Length: 597
Image (cartoon, rainbow, N blue to C red; front, top):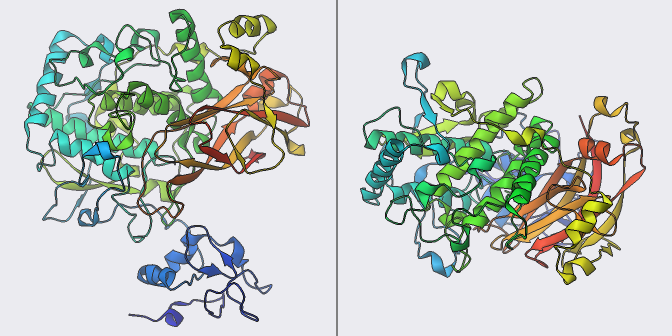
């Protein structure tokens, strides 16, 4: 094995010392790095990079196989970054380990798939797509009796398979647990967890997951045209839990759901653990405006829509995109059973795949990707970063054969031979509205006395713990200030809530308001002053050095909101952070505004 001195590369030159905070004359270390055991140099010569700003990814990529040994020895070295060579990859399936400290109610020993004696093969779409059957995913609420019977038969066949068959419902449900609760580490980084949520991998992973799940179901009933349904919760007709999932004699039924949320109860896409006091018409209106905010106002560019980059060697949870936060998170928690110790099934990542409703929920999330691209084909495009395109995952297909599939393989739905039933998207015209005094007065009558009296405290300094509403004035970059006439040509102005630290196994939601005044509580889910929200669906990580907490970032596009609020020319905005679920469980590191190209 190569020694550490043999692994050092030029031009950067470092001398090694013990990981002591006081080594006189040493050019190596003095500042602890996040998630690392050792110390990194805080002083550099003019020709050297500033070691205090080095990313652990830069270090571990340079060390290669010796990275873990060096970290254990208390030493971290820096190496030049390999541009376009850091895609996250799932390692060999044999490396899958036990999930991390699942809730006692889990009764799960492993989330790993059955082992494979063969090496994975690379995914290959049909060579001639036009000759393969095209599968059309229907809206669940409008599916006919024949389709429902076929779907029941397919799920029953999958549930009848033994658990050690990778096509079985038990094995398929465990896929989500393995990728979300610390069973895998990225290839080459055994000291880190692989996490497919809270980053640009979210949409991609779940598309791959549904693709193979659907192919297996079709194979089990001998129907290559079979397609799974989507839960059309973004349109009024689909806002109740689809009836096919509520029949207690059906294999689609899951007893571990919230019993208060059966039809005709309408879903609350802004759900925070409490039942809203809205009429059905008000709930529909709020849901549509929430969808507009998440899909249009907060998603003007690909980098904002998909979420923050997550590369090999990064800590997980770099930052979710708008749709992952809402409606994805609230739908999970709305469906989970609050009487279960950990919100099972849908309300916790480790168990979510056990509910057949999970796959309909994520089919609609996947549909949102396709809808978003169609809203503005010129601007709404897929990312082109090679680290995104070459990220890969392992799944079993219908044969069953272990397959490695890459992001670049799943960008074209036509090549994958599936599409969605064409249904209306009424939320595209449901732009959030500025909360007038009349609306504030009417909304205030629905609030509890406690909510009406809840003011916001000023944040004296950060970090702050969100145990109550907190207000801070945030200066805007000089280049961001513009007139209304200039707003259409402006670059994206982004509000960044950074250093969000939250217990990962706790359901958490906090809202972010801009220029809401003293009575933010009167601003409803469809109010323009509501800039966005952060949602954490409970899960665990095995290798997280911060214990039970994750650290992440929320990015909220502001251009359209500031235009509607008439604040394009203001020097600053007032940001109010309001905890809705998990009060006192969230810390905020900083709040700032930046300009994005």
